[in-house]
Length: 222
Image (cartoon, rainbow, N blue to C red; front, top):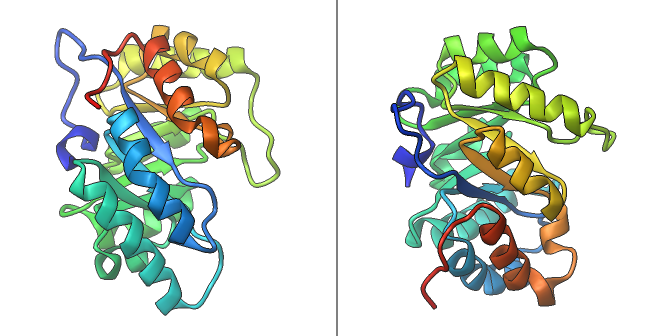
């Protein structure tokens, strides 16, 4: 659902936020691909961020295609984490770029046909620069390459500031179930769930149901 992720300006009455899933770093997509349809049915996400472990280019494209095809068949946009150069060949809907420099470098290859998301934004200025350049969304709160992130209070403040002032959608990173409701209250447009979602594969559906409950979203169809 590309339109759900694209920057279109906020209406007077904000729609309910949507879930945004991200995969683990995938080195072998087989088992994950088998479990993914059930997770997508439970979540009804607007999009999924496909994260791929390092491999040769052909292998990366093959892995990405497998996940993108499943997600798109269920109405979710499929974005690659980085690797904007592989988006077209993988059949993805766009890419998520970390850092304002990588975002700017990739923008020409993605727009206007594909989604360009921006994360790893170190300052308000970087976020505004990304939006002005044409970002379809900005993301706040995700860990950096060392696994560190701002205080949760700072993340809430950044999301609320963005939602009040800017039209481009805001994605807020939830590092636990307990972070979801405050991020919704801060007016995030999308909630992306961290690696905790997949840490216990037996409870993914239950965690997604709990996430939707905290977002005050209706039950999904079986």
